[in-house]
Amino acid sequence: MEKEKAAMEEPQRKIWRKIWRRIRTKREKEKTAMEEPERKNRRRIRRKMEGPEWNIPREKASLDDDELWAGFKWEETDKILSGEIQPRTLITTYMSPCSSTYPERGPFIAREMASVFPNSKYVIRGPNVMLDAIIALARKNGCTSLILARTDPTGEDTISIVNFLNNATATFRVIDLIPREDIPNRSDPITGLYPRIQMRGFESPASVGTAKMIQALFPYVPPVRGRRSIAWFEKQNNYIFFRHSGYFQKETFEGQPPPSVRSLIKECGPRFALQFTGLQIFDDHNVDFHSICMPDITWTRRCKPLPLR
Image 1 (tube, helix red, strand yellow):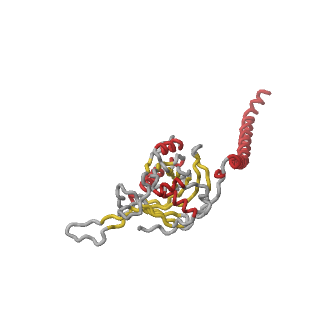
Image 2 (cartoon, rainbow, N blue to C red):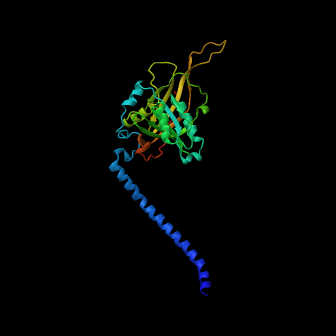
Image 3 (tube, rainbow, N blue to C red):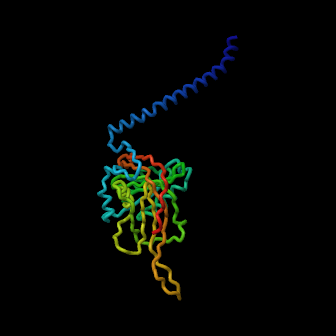
């Protein structure tokens, strides 16, 4: 009888074991979830006590915040702007899980950025290539900047510009990108001549730092008139509009008088807008990025796009 009774109760014991196992697992998850904020606070306090001040993120809501670029040194970057240093840029993609969702989008953004910035080289990043290998390759080739392109799981395109001369890293959201192939009546820039860069709307102390980050990607061009193309960057609120245009000779046909205006403005492409989304400092020793600010930017009304010059 006892054996038969034990055999009848054994399935009930198994059921109750499963129930208690599930309850125990649920309680452990709830306890871990409650302790996670405390763990993050302890980690933040430990960084505050041990690390430098830039380990503590500060919220900045606009490019016009006067303290945005405080603490960064621009002496070496100014040498690019004066022509003492020739800039070189390595462009590649982030190694992120969203690459499986948009496998071609990140490389596409990186190739378009390579057509914008002179002396830049796009390098295909393999699935197992870590950031330290990319940094080592950039250092080996004497690069002054690094651009990382990616597309997040929601489909938003972003680029991060790393300035190796002062370790500043600015992240921008890429908006309304029109590739060079889709520009109507497009012309290729003149081979062998760097474009002349024009910055407009960067008057505040904070936006001057942003302008220097962008200008450090272009070689210095003397202010002499010539048949160079022009790279336009115009800031309106939190948006930076980019256009690339140039003066090209009009075609002359046999038997017809020469045109009164011999040059024609044509767009070279690509065309896009940037929106500032964060500032970081690159930790060269640990090959890591530390946030200076992750602003809570509300997507304000889009400004009028930059017209063709």
